Image 1: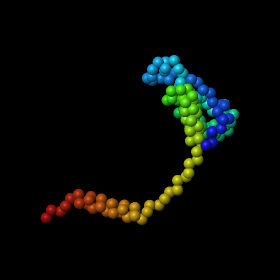
Image 2: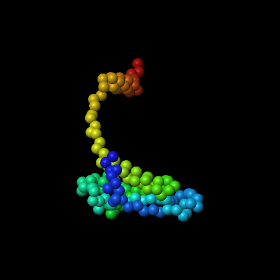
Image 3: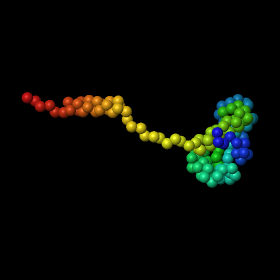
Image 4: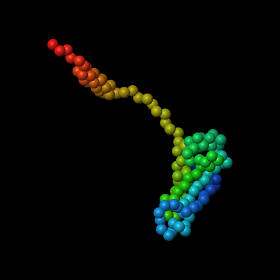
Length: 136
């Protein structure tokens, strides 16, 4: 994976807060939710082209200031949520820079052409029989 470098991790900032939802007394006193922030515009490790690509492709995760925000609150500990937020962030970044193969258009097979022709003939016959018939 392209972005597993510890260098990029130095540009991440973490903020913790209390998780929402149901829980017990533990939820009310422990900050386990982790929010990871990555300021794309101020990044020293990304090129301008990479920054533009990220800002375009990840627009729903990015604030107006150009900060990528990913949060995690599934785990019961702050550590597991931090690792989950990192995993999610790297997954997003790697997906952005993935180069998709170009599609090669293929021609239909002889069998599919024959099947289509038979289907069209059957349909034509059905429609022809629906028409007005001569009364003698």
